[in-house]
Image 1 (cartoon, rainbow, N blue to C red):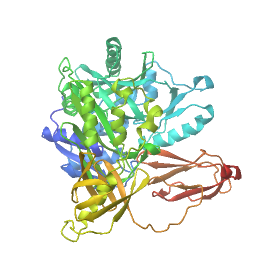
Image 2 (image 1 turned 135 degrees about the vertical axis):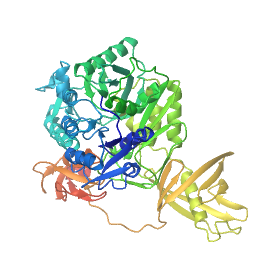
Image 3 (image 1 turned 90 degrees about the vertical axis):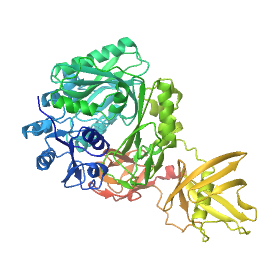
Image 4 (image 1 turned 45 degrees about the vertical axis):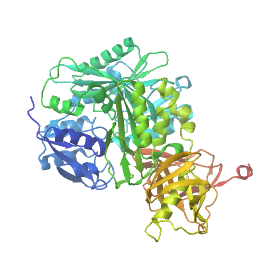
Length: 624
């Protein structure tokens, strides 16, 4: 028995660090945070009892430096280390370093991590061999990082000519995210469902299988919506994969929380994917269904306490949605900036690493929060979660909130007929803008009230029509309103009430409320984001045709081999790669033509809108 844990250092950041600290506080355990320079004022650093700085900003300089984290734990007087997920959570050498320092490791034995954390070795243990020599007959295939997860270092290859390029890209991304560039190739199952089994094992030989989770809705092979239990599985299949998960845990003398993942093919067969030897991002849905605290159980197991012989009984259904700062309509581009306000209605669980006023930077994953709903039935959980997201207040960078709401209400999802190709099929429809036509008017009326010289009151005298311009969902809108002796006249809509924060409009006998908030030129009307535009915009310099601008802040990690000014390029050809928020983004030629300028160099830090390159269209392209 390890004895009672008094102080825990979490070797992670953001949402998962805050979530672990919450359980530690409830258990009377002191908390220690590590933070990069970029995270000095991050929420996880603010809520911890003690903090230790990791000099630098990037993951490779900070959260992937195991030796620095062990030194931090010793210096802060912690007696245990929890790795969270990602970063070093599945690194056997880090686990050994923690144990060698005389600290308690809140995770599986290093030998179990070595057996399962590398996907190649895990498949060997399960009797599955990766593809060594890929042929046309093997396509499509999936390139995967051997270490880590979260969709990083993953590429689907459908043409043999793309294999080497994608292998190189996957290796670079995996090395940056996990410090290990090993990748492998396996068959890609089209139309499959991603289903996993949560396990928990103690040091006394007890292994729990805590139900199933469906994680089929993914972007870039990273989960977006997860639920427990997985709907539509036969009782026989559920029992089979649960027993296989327990056997896998016993085969490596597993201890602690872990997840065994499967891909269920359309014909109902289960294909082993991997075992994640850590806590998963989606663990809250299992906690909700089983009425447990997995972090508390991890702590108890690390202290040597036995589990009950049988796990608790599952009740109801839980669904989790990951809220990302990203633009799904433009290749899931990460977004940065100030999160002015984040709040969700009561009745759902919010796990986040941010509070109002925090900055969302470029160095880490763009997930802002996880929103979880639990109810007696799946339909009730769906309604509760989609309603909460729809009514949530999110002021700041663009997010995937609308995508989440539409996904949860899509027929394929409501009937549990989704698979991992869901977004490949439906993304254009799910991201099509549906702007509120009355939002610009509400914004204009609230702005006019806030700027009044008379204490915010409306003047009861006639006046000239006022004009306001806003950008909304990529379009420009112009609205008109006028003060009259009868009150306020606004584009034929009856204005019931207007002040700086609330506008009530009546249209065709129906009154609607619009809550308005403004931060500089950025305006939020209910869930709609607008940008206030000048009435007479200043002329701006025109960019040359074919200009490639940085879509986000990030780092140029690679330029295509041999690329130089004067080179002939074809539309869609990869020219360079940016890394932002732990994901790699490919920048391609917009047209077929000649590269006339190349401003980007490897290692360069870029800001949104910075000119990277210019491709002069060919005569044929320009005439099209």
